[in-house]
Amino acid sequence: MRRLGTLLDAVADAIAPHLDEMPYAIFGHSFGALAAFELARLLRRRGLPLPCHLVVSGRRAPGLPPSGATLHDKPDAALVERMRALGGTPQVVLDSPELMALLLPAMRADFEMLETHRHMDEPPLPVPMTALGGTDDPGVPEADLAAWRAEAGAGFAMHLFPGGHFFLMPEREAVCRLVATCLAPHLRPAAA
Image 1 (tube, one colour):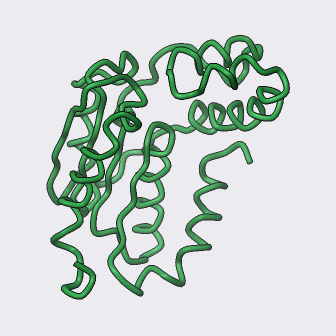
Image 2 (cartoon, helix red, strand yellow):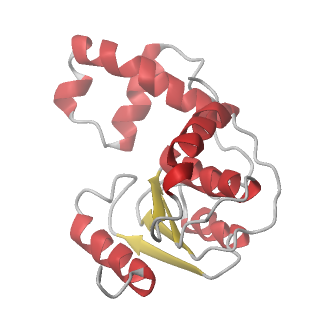
């Protein structure tokens, strides 16, 4: 699967029968933030129940112009260097030709979905949105994270955490507390 729309159609088809069972939220980090956002927009276009909250993390706002060169069409070495620079892949994996042979096709497909996706203007989502970022993430400066505000039609908050692109790992407890706070108003009393 190399197109984001194809992936999102499959996800929407799979979750559609369950969306009215209880309030739900969508969380996405990095490429997942774009996928989460576009999934919510697809659900709106289909007239399906929307999430009670959308959390986007570690990703520039989708309406911004592309930054940097594409990677999906570059040699494996360029993908490995990007993975190394992002810091989320253990060194033992990066140093293993066998593991990288398994991982690189999926990474290349992810980069292709991300890099070939073209943002289409739509009205802001009528869903509260929270954007998370790392203070030292060179690929997602604070202004680019704040630009998500233009896509939020029911409230927007932004939180920065110490760290780079994968700030989620060392800041996992703080991120979980923040997400729990975002979701608390939407929980049924018995679930709280």
